[in-house]
Length: 141
Image (cartoon, rainbow, N blue to C red):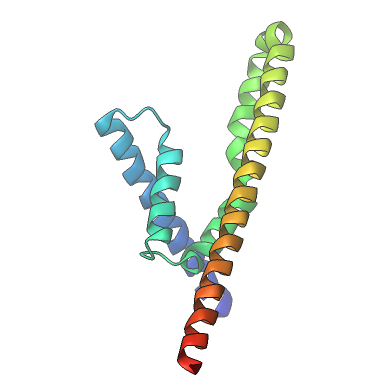
């Protein structure tokens, strides 16, 4: 019975994530935004999480399932590469160079952003701690 509940919860969470993506896709198409719908969806989800409208734990199972099954989403791309062998023979090295460069860029930018956010969290935590200590000192006087 527990497996069925977990399965339904995961399916519901994937459904919620899909609705967010569909809404983002609608916004991108309606307003001719210059960003892909998946990025717009992530931004919407980020705003909802930071705005405390959605708790991350509410979507954790569904997101984990999507990440775990991500390889399935790339199978059509692999089939396309196999079907366009001549393209790979002509431009394969350039395509590979772009893939490597873009991957390295994404990793580098992600690590910089994570580092900056981590430092910001430390700074905010220290500020909150010093305010708390200051308030305690005032109360003791």
